[in-house]
Length: 155
Image (cartoon, rainbow, N blue to C red; front, side):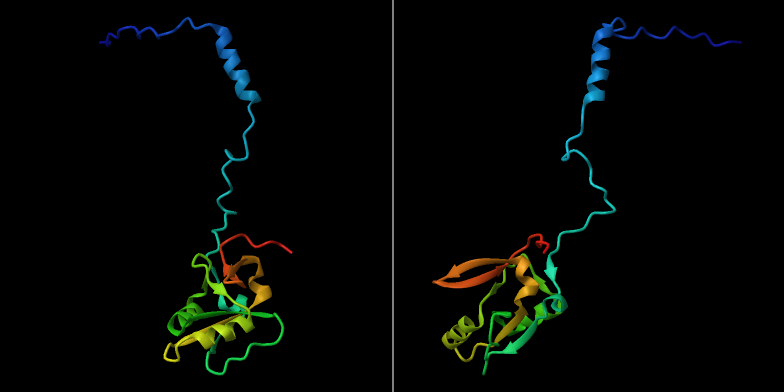
């Protein structure tokens, strides 16, 4: 015994003009993708850098008592709470915290103004190793450098 089926319903808009369909196809062929609409290759994607390691910055903690900066401009220094400086030595220098670095002569002046009971650590880094992440600012007329997150310049 066969099953009786009703005819399929008529499709709506069965008599669309043919010109509209060909125009749509031709506009699709001529369309170019903009660079923003192309999905990047996810296997080549690199996450943004958020920290600089202690090894790549040649970072060291120095004591504030008897501090004498090295001659020249090879190093920059950050005055930090001693416990925070030790945390940075373990985890690396964060680029989003905007660490402030000073030149050696300015650090000596800042240390002289601090109360003696405050436990201060001096974080010393090699200037050329963090230069790509530094922005120059002014703090009361003296230059200071802020560590910021940005793509390092090649060169």
